Image (cartoon, rainbow, N blue to C red; front, side, top):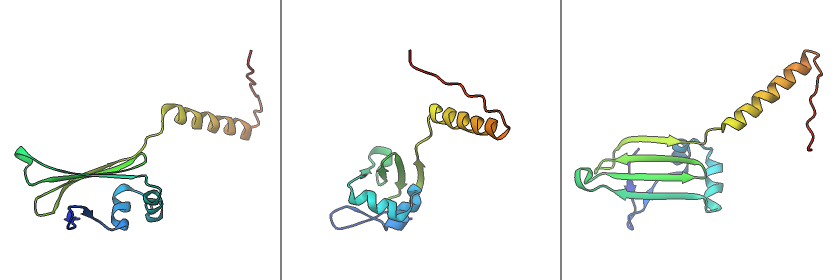
Length: 115
């Protein structure tokens, strides 16, 4: 991957390459772009990072960041994606346990009602 800029200093990349980097399907990335949900930023280095550039792309809760050398070569990159909350993990485990109990013939049900 290379950092290529257009005449106005904008970063050029194909949707397929960016979608791959972010971990999304191309159609999903294009849909998010049409909806205006793709945020990108190009920062130029200074001081000891002179000549380097950092590109950050955020799509909803997904993101990707790449550090590029002055000649456009990608030096490093990382991406992030949402992690399920502890509550969501516990909910899935509880549902799994209920289904397992029902499958084992244990139809004990606890009903909670508001006071």
